[in-house]
Length: 268
Image 1: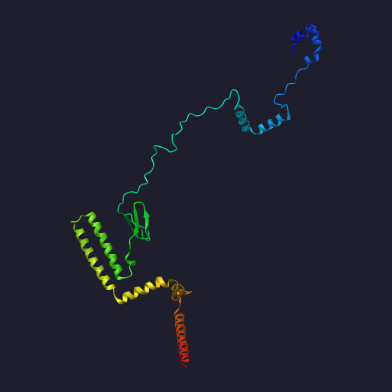
Image 2 (image 1 turned 90 degrees about the vertical axis):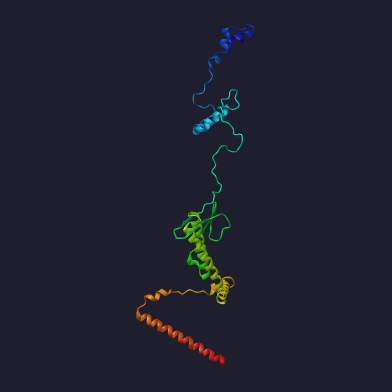
C-alpha cells in the first residue's frame, strides 16, 4: 500500500506516522505464498495428480497450451516437396508382356513328355502358360485300336521330320529319311482307317458309345466288387485249394438243378 498517495488524497489530514499507525495490521500482514509444489485448490490438486501419472499427456497439454497464445512456439514444418500427381514417376516396372514363343520340351517325374505349343485353344489336360500351351505328348500305350496306333505313329514321324528339318536342313540325309518315314506313316494311317470301317468295328464302337453315354449310371450301379480279392487264393495250401474247387463245382451243379427244375415247372 502506497501511503504517500493516500496522504495526498486525504489533503494532509493525517501524517505519515498516523497513517502507518492506522494501517499497521494490513501492512504487517503478508499475503500467503503457495507452497512450492503444493496445489492451491482441489482442482489443481486433481490436475497435478493426473499429470504426474501421465507424463506424455502432460507434455501434450503443454504443447496444446501454446496453440492460440500470443507467442506460439509451433514446430517448423518439414521441407518436403509435394508431388504434382498421385502417380509415381520414373519407376522401373517389370515387363509383363508375353515372351516370344520358343519350341521346347520337358519331362516330368512320371516320365511324361510335355511339348510347348504356340498360343491357341487349350485342350483337356493342357497347362496354359505365358506365350504358349504345355501339352502332354501321347504315349503308344494310350492307343486302344490299330487306327489310333497308326495316328500316333504318324504324329511322331511328323515331329521327327520337323526336328530334322530345323536342325540339319532340307538337304541332309537325316531329313530325307525322316520324310520317307512320314510318308510311310501316312500310308499306314490311311490303310488302318479303311480296315477299321468294318461291321465288327462299327458294332464295337456303337457298344462303347452306348455304354459311355446312355447307360453310364446303369452300368455303374451294376458294377460290383468282391469282398476278398483274387490274390487271397494264392495263399491256400493244396488241400484248401482242392476243397475250394469242389465247393465251387457243387454250387455250380446246384444252380443247374434249380434252373432245370424251374424250367420243368414252367413247361407244365
